[in-house]
Image (cartoon, rainbow, N blue to C red; front, top):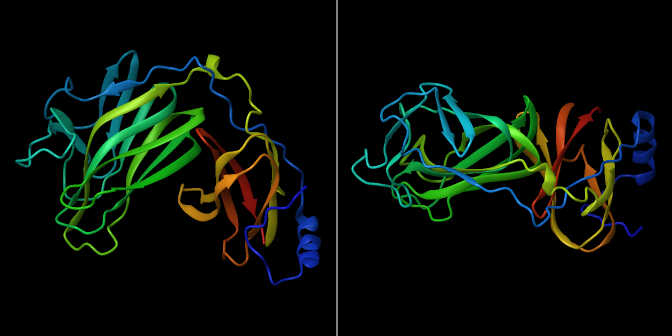
Length: 300
C-alpha cells in the first residue's frame, strides 16, 4: 500500500496509534458507490405553474407520479407570481415559491417515494452585492441523515440566481433547503430567497449494477480518537472528495478534494489539531456521481 498523506503531524505516530488501539472497536468495511448503468431514471420537473396562486404552505403538489409535500419553518412560504416584486429573477417564470416574511425560514420538502437527485433554482435577496450568500440542501431517508451540499451564486449582484443541488445514489425522501450564511461583505441583503423549477430523479434500483465500481472498501476506527487514518482502495481513477460533517449537516473539515489514481490510499485526520469535540459525525465520501455517508463517533 502506498500511503497518501494529506497532513503531516509533529506528534509521535507511534504514540497516537497506541492511543487509538485502546479505543479501536472494529474495522468497518463498506461497499460504496453504485455504478449507474445505461438505464437511468427520468427527471421530473416541478415548475409550480399549476399550483394554486397565493396558497400558503403546507401544500402538496404532484408531477409525473411523484408527490411532494411542501412545508416550512418560521413564517413560511406561499405560491406567488415570479414578478411580484416588479421584476422577474433571471430564469424564473410563471409561479414560484415566495417567502411570507423578511425573516429566516427553512423550506421543507417531503416526497412520497425515494429519490437520488434533487435541484432547485433559487434567488436570494441581495442588492448590488459583490459576493453572495451560501445556500444549503440537506437530505434524509426515513428521518436519518444522508448528506448535504452548499452553493454560492456564481454571479453576485441584485437577486442573483443559481441552482442548489445534490445527488446521493443510496436515495433520500426528504429535503431541507436552508439559508446558511449571509454574503461575506454585502450589507444590502436579507435572509430570504425565492425558489422555482425543482427537478428530482426517482430512485431506480434496476440501474445499480456493481456496488464496488469505485471503492473496494473503507477501513476506519470507530470510535475515533485524537488521530486516525481512513484507508480505501480505488478501483478506477476519479475525482474524490472526503469530508466530515456534524449531526446537523454542517461541514466541519474537508479532508481531501482532488483527483486520485487507481490503487490504495490513506487519508490522515488529526482530530485534536482540528479541535473537533466529542460526538456523532458523518464521514462523507464522494466519487463522481456517487456518495456515501458513514456515521462515526469522536471520543477523546
